Amino acid sequence: MSGVDSQDVLAAYDAVRSDKDATNWLLLSYAGAVGDKLTLTATGSGGLEELATKLDDSQAQYAYVRIEYANDTESKRVKFILVIWIGEGTKVMRKARVSIESGNVKRVLGHHSISVDARDRSDLDEKDIVARLRRAGGADYNGGRG
Image 1 (cartoon, one colour):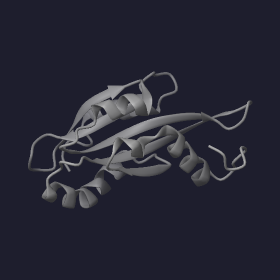
Image 2 (image 1 turned 30 degrees about the vertical axis):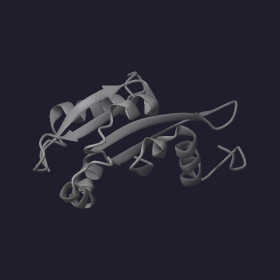
Image 3 (image 1 turned 135 degrees about the vertical axis):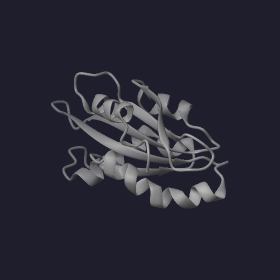
Image 4 (image 1 turned 180 degrees about the vertical axis):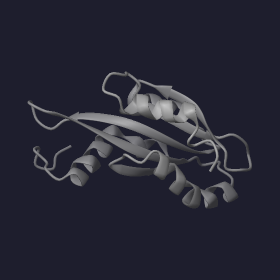
């Protein structure tokens, strides 16, 4: 898959992972209606809420997001998620290829706790995602409450 390991994508990935950078998400989109070339579409520091405003209902896109949440009053956890977005208007052939092409994206943006398949912006509710991260992460100091 061309583009996913380009310098600008890798620099954005490093920024999202860095504790010293405010950037907490990046968004990759297909460069054209056909082909597998991905380009860095946007980055931001407004979390899932900001990312959701950048998603295109006519496209398949990939996002990498830094999520921070409190385990208890004494500690904070940082986790990373990979979002595989398939907008409602995505063409059938593109939808079909996402399952194959997402493997390469997962390889390059490899350090993530969970992968989130999103078809609707409500799939990116931070409370629900934090609850999934807690379940995936083992210790839950809130008795399962998100």
